[in-house]
Length: 121
Length: 293
Figure 1 (spheres, rainbow over the protein chains, first blue to last red):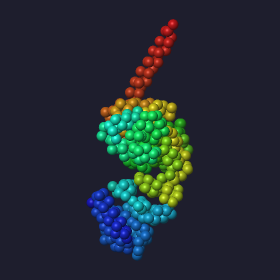
Figure 2 (cartoon, rainbow over the protein chains, first blue to last red; figure 1 turned 60 degrees about the vertical axis):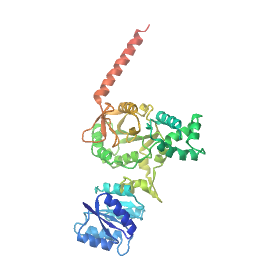
Figure 3 (cartoon, chains in turn blue, orange; figure 1 turned 120 degrees about the horizontal axis):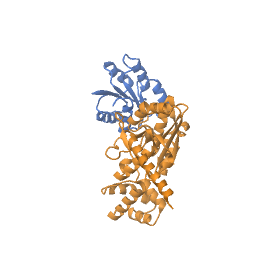
Figure 4 (cartoon, each protein chain N blue to C red; figure 1 turned 45 degrees about the vertical axis):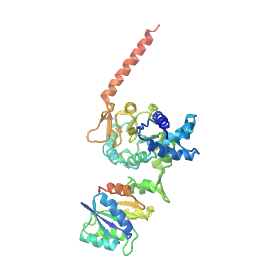
């Protein structure tokens, strides 16, 4: 079973994402900020990461930079999932190594389409 | 809704759009037409039917449009577009090297996601740079064609099937809306067209996308449309159907392409035979005309 790390400071969003992704046959790991997500990744890299942008301690953008510099850190497919919906943020995320980008609000169809797009399902 | 009103609407929709509603779809008609009736100041379906019977043509068109399913999204089903990029376009680039032009028809194009997905594929396909590529988008509904022409999509619409890199590359953001850039919009010509009526005036095409529309038609209508599609497709052209559609067991105007699910080629043997028949008939007519006193 593939693993997906859901990184978001909102427990509600993590719960919604978990329900959608478990329906897509992913085993879910959770982290509430970028720092905790990095710790999870150091223990073992997931196949996919659904990543919020604005979070306390370490935001999603900084986390992505750190992840991509880790040994093997280029492997997980990273899908941003954020309310930062302007084109400048999207371009910045892609430049930093994001594979896809979901603009909140989202639903199951969008998550499925984006995960298909990057070859995760 | 009375059974008589339902039968009247069923017959009307069949004649006007080919929509083949089974006898148990009253709920669908009610859910789509009751809001329309209220919007135009009528009490419900009964008054709507009475108005149509009195000859209200504009209202009849609205009814037909309201019953049309416009579900669509960018790069729907993905596979047909992979085929387009990986095999169809490379083959056509070789086959049309002298003419350096392509014609693609997107039948039942709805709000534009499909023809614009094709346009973006063409734009990304370097060997077609400098070629004249016409993409003709047709639909029964003028309303959806107007939306398609504008090329403006909601945040929800651009997230269904469109890779994020393409969103950034080909769209301009205005608040929560995204508009396709003018160069992509200019690649698509829009025309209103009912597939039940003659479409030979559109000319011939190298590729036809006719996806997720024939499923709503009955068997005879499908056979008729397949026959006419074969006549406007080049002998080495390709027809793309929806994931739930096929010609198998319906028409021999096309044959399926092995290992390319959803793609079909005109059945050249059959087309040639039809050509011989047509020639024989015209020869007979000429003979009869010459022999007439």
